[in-house]
Image (cartoon, rainbow, N blue to C red; front, top):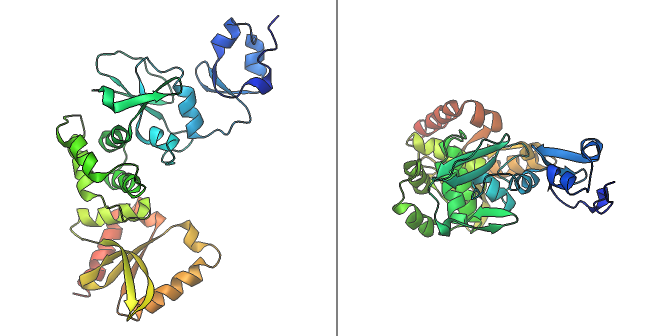
Length: 296
């Protein structure tokens, strides 16, 4: 008879199902029918633990190949930057010399790894901040757009998670797949950006030869009127991204009041919605170009 040493309330985190069965802590029937969520093959967690991406990272680390390193947006998420959604694949890199088997729900990439690239974490390894950032920027297989990865980089720079000069040195002599894109992303980055979508808008514009400066303050004399997400100063065109929160509560009224005061100083606003940014960014660019052309 299995012991009661691991009663339901005594499981505080992920565990390998076959191990607890072999040790007599649960029967297979208890494992299948008990209050446990199976997150990966043979890996479970007690119900009641929030099913978020961080839990999936803690679970996946138990079953990935030896030497695998948690990295990319997954590692950033466990370090406090919620870049990954719950069911996004958990990202790992594995040393070039090691073979590995695919694991459903993960994204494993073979690459060159140095000892300075990772540190111990839980039952495995996690990438250092510079390595996390490089893998976010270089991994094209996950189909993140170039503006998106620049937005993620802006967030890490703004928070002080990494230093831009240190990242430049780190990338300088590497030859990893995607390293050219990583260097270009660093050249496009700006830690003044206050949101990922704002960064994405700025990068889309720059890719089409429109330079927009982030977080520009507007004054009437000495009176502060407001801060613009993005500004094209020579045309006095302000480009702002309105996410869902701009439609809540008092925010629409506050936005309208601020914009009216700034428009009185000769500025024109182009307001970008989530649907426009992600469904048709080129139409967004054309709209901004038209606004600029009409004022120069």
